[in-house]
Image (cartoon, rainbow, N blue to C red; front, side, top):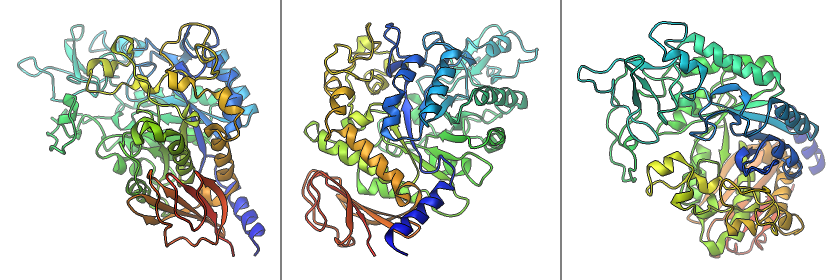
Length: 545
């Protein structure tokens, strides 16, 4: 079989796979993508107006962070109505228009679902706190105080302080793993699960193609309210009471997978709907594998392997890839280097003077990984973390733990569309967060006309990933993992590609495991086959036969 027929055979096999397997997903943070009405906050019509930018990248889907009705205490992750759009973002008609335009551009649409908690302004909570009897009395996690009036357990909130708040109306405490205004749903209760599945159906009926499930391992707790044990000192800074415990009982209950099977069953009724879990914590890997095991739970999951890492090293990549075995029935991973909850990678992983070269290496590495890849808005432009003064902070976690917690606001700053516009073409008003001067200089219009820009390189690399089945859905072997040099070998249907990375700012010798005779299908930062690898050099070599 010649090279062309091997690739054609591999492509035919890859087309038989579900659309999401190996997909590139673009995460949109609605408040900061594009503002259509000049109020300084991004909205759904703004996303629709800029969908061409996303489609031109060559991604398969967009994932939109919460836009549901909310008092915005946690910027949309405190939902007051799961089945409506907050007025700051638009209307349901605006969402329908977004779906229609996205599908016309061959983009799938995923939305966030927050099933572990609601806002305290949700009608369900209003009914639940009204008294200890009634149809929704047990829809949230309520508990009596201890004999001395203390909270029912020692559980601590992610955002700081006890995870229990006293409510005088019921004479009980209610549980909240995050803000006190985000009461915990009692997902052990079948009626609550039924209501949440009804929410999923609402959005599926409007044409949604997938869900990202937020903080999924917080969906169920230990009903006995057993105290969490203390966490051993691992040398990491502890900035919150939450960090002092092993979270064995306030989250990660063994019954969560049964609920996931119900979610998957509903999604299967609608065809090729993609489900992806966010899972964090010390036991994240174990839980991600459990949540994606077999064909009856979720399709994929992602953790925080890269999102909070302070360095990008061959060892980190090798370990992350090894954590997802390529066995039948094993789960399928998703990967993100950046998102709305983590500092921008270019501000964590390299020196300021290295950012341009390193950004090119970083996007190439993401495109070489086995699994789904998630690009956070602005990552294709090389945006960096913006230093937000305390007086301008919006992030409740950063405000509560100032100055020991790095603000999430710095990664949520508005997208710069136009370099010569004071507000970057994001809004005609005053943006809800500052854009940052360095990010403004990286605006999309400036990069779009530069054939050598990071934006255009991202387009080229995504096209390469889509064209080569070995890169999109093939097997992965780590054939070299040194102090600075990483080699990944991807293979599918007779096609083999070696991806060689120098993750350091210094010249490195060519890895002996890689023959230099392959055909270079991508060369970045002046790398050449068989020669010393320049700083942050990258080569994709197709094996020739």
